[in-house]
Image (tube, rainbow, N blue to C red; front, side):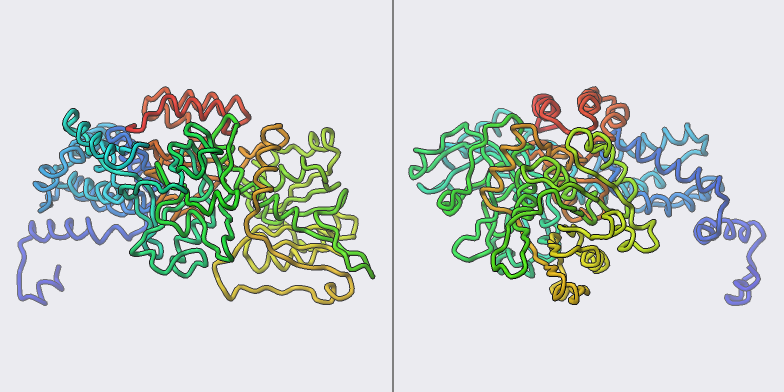
Length: 602
């Protein structure tokens, strides 16, 4: 205070100086260290506020790390102001009350609830309005205020009938905002939007389909962050946005005249997205304005049927058809592996029968898909080693594939190994093989040390498949070329499978020889697809399965029960019961319950 008095030539009264000291402490003191008990109390207050807002707004805010961090930074000076009875004026208070009455009501109620729970002094309306701005920023970003009462109209009889039906709906239900087709579309690098638009009428050689499920692929994340830098994205994507998603399944709605002999309305479908049409890399989920999986409806173009890539699906669960695509990628990788014989200029295709196989960085969703296929395909290895550096992923993998049971049932030696705990990973992995090295190695991460480890553990005539696609066009790693020359080791890469691989996946799933559900850890609605895609590397777990006609936050299967208790919603509890009864895995019974009990407007 003395320094301020000297600087400005003032003499503040003692009471004014004391008030100013308290006011400054409320803002500047937030950087001073607190004790662990105080920090914990602040974290508990932050969590309680979020829970109250989730309950009032019927939405899931658990995925917004920035919200938690922003609240934590805001709450400490706010508590000092409240405790010292320092009044602060919020110029946006009236605007928030008037323009966002639902948000204001929820925030005011949440403040009152935590005030009672934590025995706090009264939280003023001005302070509550500042908190509302934090929550409002997140909800606006997620289009919370706009999605609740939006409906999509799609009619197989054409746009004229659709518009007539939309007009009738608007007249009968004034509270509904009638939209067109809904999808997640890419407009530019890292720019995905939940958009609504009208599909054109299909041509004679096209097919209109209803998408039911789409699983989000890491390749879609790469597409989103690269934009036109991705090989499959058109340069004019800003003018003609591409629908995201390529691992999808659903129902055929309307068939053009050219295909009515083979496909009928009401048929279930899935498709092979790796079209390779006339030498291009165009693919649904990357390259087409009206063709992709993160949509309520889409139009399948003529080239898909021409190539035989549209498949009738006769199975029970849509998600199994969606997951046939990522499974086909691993199937294609196994089929593309090859081995040689000295002096013979002929390659034996496929992994080595009874050989030693390693899946590096393999406890994620794609690695687990490769593992279930390795254990249950016709030509099998005698040993499989799965490595990772994440103990939680490894523990989940081992619970799904207990090595003792695998040995008894399938006769295969299975090991789960955390290479982060090894002083010399290459030497210790080779030791597991008895010193021979591996016949087949699949690298499931585009990380140079993992690639180099893959090279280092190859045995004689070992085949390394670099499965994971990098985003860096200059990505490189060291490889032992002494072994290439003298031990016939070799490297290759595959991207996607083909239609035969898709069919093999569907057949193995139908025969219950493989269970692609081992890849799934989360479910959500179309409203969650864009944010999930853009943040995919940051979200733990495996595959994120999107049901495109539902509005639902992305939620982990392990969190279903807590979600039911938190929202007092027995549907989530029932889903948790079904999942728990199936070893914690998504299953046809869970999907059927979800589609029957979670309405699109929920």
